[in-house]
Image 1 (tube, rainbow, N blue to C red):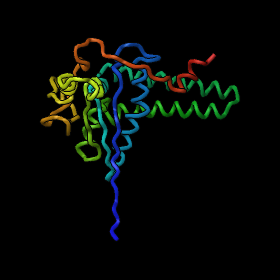
Image 2: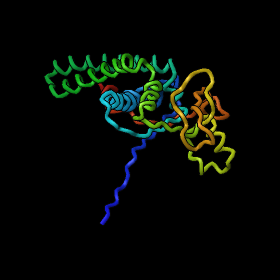
Image 3: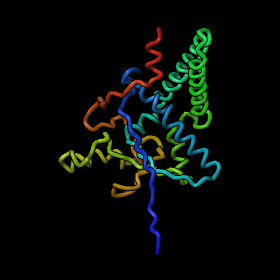
Image 4: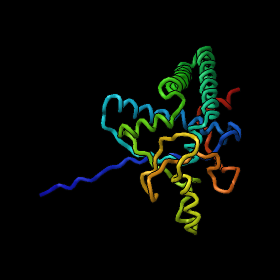
Length: 227
């Protein structure tokens, strides 16, 4: 009797609203900084470790044009570094505060966060040279990451009603890039292979890309509730 084996494919979805220079907290650029620190850098760092040790781990990551634009933005990278430095400084002050209060568990947590933000900053600057798109490209070239694009505004295309609307939102993900190189290649859903266009106008026919509310992380809640 033959045994039938199934298949498992790990597909991660990468998208964030356009938050560049619309403020920091609560629903501003800080939500992007937090996601980079707690999701994209750990993910890319782990995959890079596996690649260096020649472990054949593979997964698929979709990256929307809006997210790619922000990950490749030098100003956002600068703001992200400031975010990490500020968080590390706050955590360090909490270490001393909790030690004076005799709260050893809270002191341990504050120290963990201080180390986390300092380590993340070191990885961002040293290992990835402040360019997460280039890190993703290297992983794709080594066969550890398959990168897929998505519609420009992350819309659910079947609900748009007209095929022309779907094409207009697919074009930024399937059009050649102008002015810089990007690692993200469209492998499916387009008539021909192309690169993802990193454009300031990620949302068609609008100069104000939309954003949506995101929850404040527990660490930020603790900071805001500090007396």
